[in-house]
View 1 (cartoon, rainbow, N blue to C red):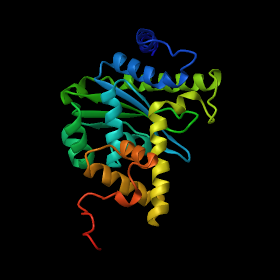
View 2 (view 1 turned 120 degrees about the horizontal axis):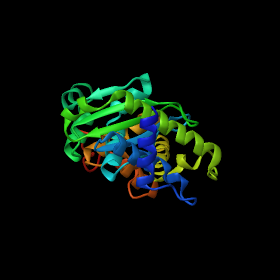
View 3 (view 1 turned 90 degrees about the vertical axis):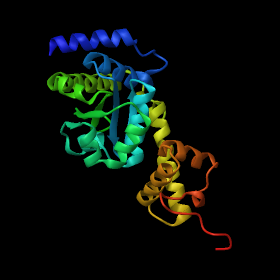
Length: 251
């Protein structure tokens, strides 16, 4: 454990320390340190926050960030399973296609990743979390030292907990790392789902599924589509799920 801790600290120093004015960037730095320590192609951190659903905290790269948004757009995947069951999930391409075909299609179509390992991490102040590890070569999954990866996950949870105690909290409430760019973008999804539910007379969960389906139909992530709904560029009546055609003129 000490050697893993030393390697993780060294990796964190190499990727840079969070500045006093940007503690919300801590999860991204931790994700980059995870990827470097474990020698994987990408890493992402998320939590299931009470009353807010799943929040992405940070990722090691823009591609890893996209992978999380694709999984959320699909509605299910390895990370969700790891958070739900609190057990590690190992998924090569065939596993992804069998268990989560929608996510598999999105992931392999829009990223170079071909395998995912999702690990539950110790519960943070916000709720249960997960560490996603991404691989461009699915055969590399067998080289992952699982106990080392779990230890790194524990170090991440500890770092987030320490930051919650010692770093200033955000004006919105909670530690600043709960309000980074990815988490703020996800908040637009909940806002958009509420607007769609009200406008179309449906429940927020049903509205979320409509947003997801409409996003997949147009080749977008639900986060991007929700941003357009919140900004008024797309109206609730404009949303069409996969396979649904717009009404004919006069109907």
